Amino acid sequence: MEIEKKDIRSLSKEQLRDFFVANGDKAFRGNQVYEWLWSKASHSFEDMTNVSKETRTMLENNFVINHIKVDTIQRSDDGTVKNAVRLHDDLIVESVLIPTKTRTTACVSSQVGCSLDCNFCATARLKRMRNLNPDEIYDQVVAIDRESRLYFNRPLSNIVFMGMGEPLMNYPNVMKAIDKITSNEGLGMSAKRITVSTSGIPKMIRKMADDDVKVKLAVSLHSGIDDVRSKIMPFSQNFPLKDLRESLEYWYQKTKSKITYEYVVWKGINDSKEAVDALVKFCKYVPCKVNLIEYNPIDDGEFQQASDDAIDLYINELEKNKIVAKVRRSRGKDIDAACGQLANKS
Image (cartoon, rainbow, N blue to C red):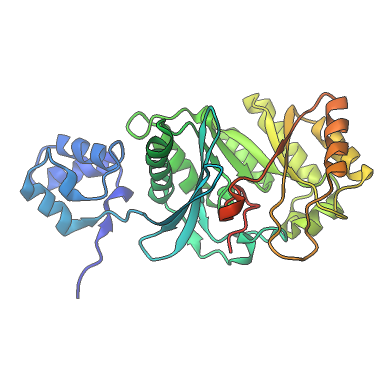
């Protein structure tokens, strides 16, 4: 019976160094292999040309590199690129490259499926299969960086955790991935260019603040009225707006980092003056900005894009109260690749 090999990227640099010492080699060999695995994002031991063939064979005999494979790439007329990413166990997630004139943003997934039950979201209809490992999150970023260089002749500039899954329900692995992405031994990206988008889990927002995480925080809010929000996002009945507000106040007190509220306006659900006033009130608790997001309907059901008049009402009231607000148009419509928990992932 064949013994299942361990994924070498689950080892720390110290563990790699110890492995080589235990096998009669020098500790620095672990440093070399670690650099190949992370900084150079190698997917094969054969690539590791500064270690001997014997050493590569030894690694092959003991370990695997469970790297992702980009199964299909779809390119939109607006430049958006959608990747269907196959994991080592044949499960599929999606990642998206979103270009503008000045930046390219990677939208990455953190779970296969999702732990939550937001009624407007296609991903929520997929049961959560498992959390992604740190290296699987890292690989999505590496793949999009390469696409950015290939298609737009510039490196990736920003990362948003707005793909499949709730990042804060996979907190340890997401944070390990961010550590690797921001490390000089990894991709060396600034944490300020990374946004973690959550549906709003107060306990985990507080943990992020306590852990002194340097990334930006976005919250899928969608209503400042508890009853309405719980119809949109049933799980939020366990996390009332008062608890969310207090956790965001705590976040800002600790980090002094402004929060972004992601907010979709739906016809007949949150397009009333009462809904607008509730959002304005909620925005006054903590320094913030609001992204009003164009919705991609996932069917002909109750969640349909609100009228332009409703969007204008939101914009006017927010600006009147000196709250920064922008309308985010859906990208990649022709390939069905809007970034966010809002994306139609059928």
